[in-house]
Image 1 (spheres, rainbow, N blue to C red):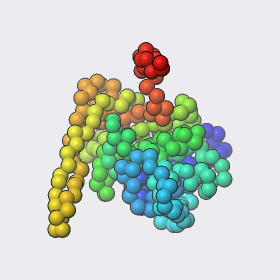
Image 2 (image 1 turned 90 degrees about the horizontal axis):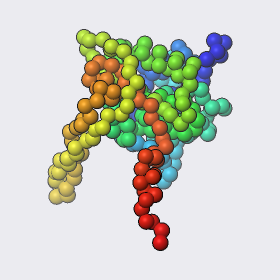
Image 3 (image 1 turned 45 degrees about the vertical axis):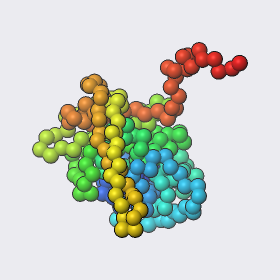
Image 4 (image 1 turned 90 degrees about the vertical axis):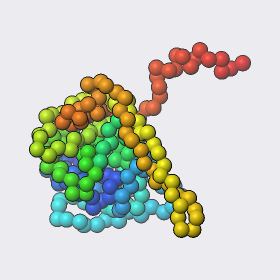
Length: 260
């Protein structure tokens, strides 16, 4: 990053444009570049990479605080926000897209469901270096102060070094009280899953309805995973690719008799 130039940084999230997490991220990014915010007008958690195709999209400028950023509130999903920013709002491709800071974990298998990370992935598809940030605290009044310097360092490094082609970063930050964050570890995604259950209930009209519940199960005992890093007070950084091809399986599948 050249000292005389301020990079253009696109900021988005999935908790909504008024969420404390994105307000903190905007504050940090304002110290590093020229910031444009395009974020959902309401919470979009768990939306994954959904895009709006069957209803109207709205995107309107607004002012929330006296920061230096330019902001737009979007009626769509996090992926919609990035698409609109790149194709309709910005006059050039941003130097970086940051998504978050999410209220809650997006480590391990959670990356699949995450609207936060899907916004980062959408930016990556557009050829924009991108990072998703999440704090392991669902509380709306979560304390982001311990993570601030680390977030700034990660962003500065990506602006200076760039990212490998077709790769975005999934950054998760442990929730700590008295302890301090020990550092940052580059990790792999832990092999873990949700053991899901549905709480079945009946409404006064006699119709059944369900609440999704479940338990997070981590089967991975490796010390090189995001779950291990977070459990041991480190920030985890996982490089994520959006080419979902299982390259290791191609040779085996080619042994199948698929053509007569």
